Length: 532
Image 1 (spheres, rainbow, N blue to C red):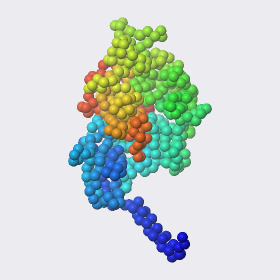
Image 2 (cartoon, rainbow, N blue to C red):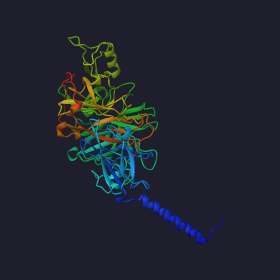
Image 3 (tube, helix red, strand yellow):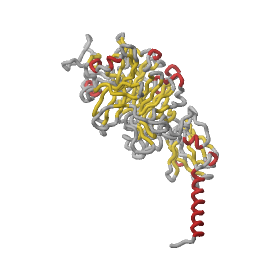
Image 4 (cartoon, rainbow, N blue to C red):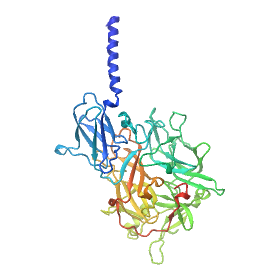
């Protein structure tokens, strides 16, 4: 079909006007948005990760300030029904038992929605990923924390490790997604932040990432020689001094296969000149020995010496010096078994748990078997966790242990394996010594919801960030749908870190007095230890 030049010009003009209209719609100003802010009824603080869904199945999620910036051509200046839901919060109830509320979507107006929290812990903000305060900024408001919409080109980060080392607070994450390609960084990501004394975790943490080049994606933080190109995961961070009083940061690494089995493992030492972990020595595979650093070691004084206690709960320890940590023969396992396989007992014929150098630590499966056979009572076991209300057993997947000065006890915060959601239920327990007995526990956060369970794995307590002498503690974990059975991920939040706070004086987590501890281990003075 042939057209005249005038006709073609008219068509181009019409197309340009149409595109200009689209651009005008896309680049809406703050006055064009209808602001929905969802807050915690108890604290008045904005709630991140609240789903707001319309009847046409459009989904919006509040940012870390609790805002959704709503602007939908054709749906403004009229009443719109919003279904409002979030993990750990009650939904508003409408007519006929519906969950939601009708709002008039007037541009430049703002409405406040208050939700009742059912979680004991309060969700504060997202730590990683893009658009942490996206909606707040679309609305022309000032974010709680001055963080960029995109930091280090990071869109997702898995499982955090933290340490105070060499005058800085350092943060490390495992597999990290990027913006420009479906594959990201699989050899650890790192960042620094101000020291804990200069931070207010109620507001947030500003990260300065280690980048490949200024303005580029994050760079690898672990250097390992391996035969295959497996992801490298680093954990078990410990700050120690050598015989010359030189400070070192030591950690464990695993090279992980796709099925999560370990292809290679070893110890790493941080190279200050290049800001990278470098392989120091190989370790036996976990199928051969469990005497190695992992999780989040805690510095403890026991038997007139300082140790790092390792595990959730701790079942391995090693003297807190560089020479011992880098010598696999110095590691001790907690066990009640003698070399001949018999059970150690004291003069009262009670089972005796001891630290033994070079001895494999007792496993949770062995503890469960001893309890089932009537050889060991739950009160005697290092770990036999059960719901303080129902006495139902609760199985630990992963977590961390820390000393709490407010409670004057050791605390363990962990995610459950196989609860209401597969890896999304967070529990809190206390004990009189770090190795237990760990008995009663209470749930402080859920990530289960009808039709949309989510994971919240590898939760990490931050004892360095606690406030009010330990009454307020902070913890974070990885929010993701990987193992949950939920096929649709949550935009921006998926595969990222969420920060929570918990008031340990809350009566809802009060538990029976824990039994006497297995040892008299005491925390090392926080001011005397760079790793605490």
